[in-house]
Image (cartoon, rainbow, N blue to C red; front, top):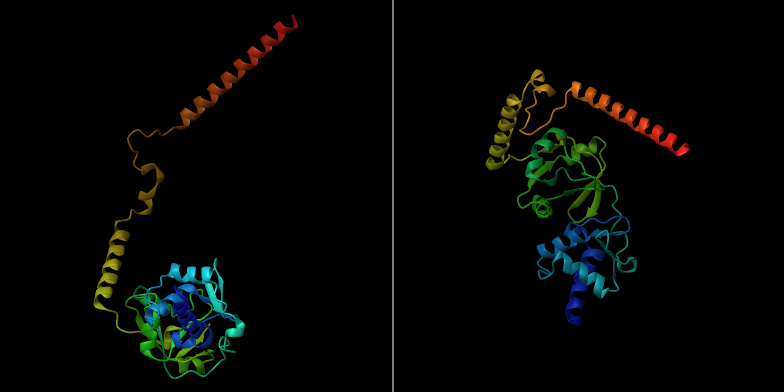
Length: 261
């Protein structure tokens, strides 16, 4: 990579990490650290640096060490240095949301979300988008065909839920969104059929399972060549060990008498 390419890439990265991260649906912590994997996905989406892979992007920060950025290699985090960052872009103030927001989910999480709702899933923030198109972009970072859930954000806000504004079309929340505030799309036929087949299969397996009386250990099939010791066997083994111990003690006494002579 020549100096001209480095300069162009540094300018792109500075805009993404230090100037307008929310425009690219990126969320950083209070210190501005952002996951390297998320940054790479943004570069691919925007077709800004299609030649970069996650490993080459990491190598770029580690080898070239551009002065405007910092990297924590072990954690896979990167950020623009504080002096190169626009003030306040990682402060997410509470704000009244629009009537509706949109959240992408994986198709396999459909029934879980329908039953229990959505939460940040171990992350600090649950990301919500002001438009369906932005939610699709965000969802394609973790699934090729995400489902878009419509969130009744204004109703949730009126019930005391706090939403934070990250900029552009991005809203954040730390709270659990219950099913009453969610409008799920219709599930695609192929996924619905697959789920129904899995449910029927589970029912058949449960019916085929043996009852409690059939699960006793004495009815476990014995494989050829297996050895199943009985109580008599252990009794004989203990008696034999006792005999051997007495024989050894007798021999030691005889040896002791001979030495004295």
